[in-house]
Length: 167
Image (cartoon, rainbow, N blue to C red):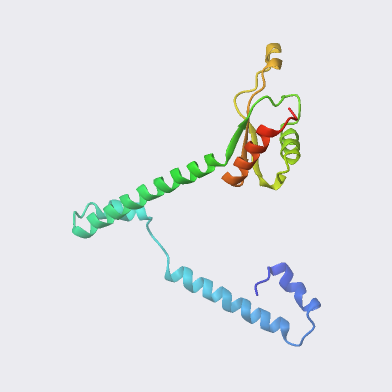
């Protein structure tokens, strides 16, 4: 077990077994030595992009493979980011006609709980668009984006909302 330095000093007060402090200090020094050994053994001097750019100057087969691998990794990362964005969008709902004079979070959470959906299924709540402080803006309410924890929860919410007469 690892303890922070402050807790390590007070640990013998709680554990009265003989030699506990010595054993903990010995373990602590062994862990520190392992950490030092690993960091010295695996020190990196260049980043991956620097290695790829340096290798491209050689024009060897290995550098071409390295460049191709870097390109594949980059495209895969882009693709994964796009997929995460799509999944996040599938779990979002846009709600209109929530008055801005109310506290938006409380109004949405009250609405969600009235629909028999757990409030813990709501991840984020935010207003869309800019706030308009002109007198005519009182009649306009910005839509609210609600992100749920899963797409199934969003579908349940929308179905319950369509049947709800609390508006």
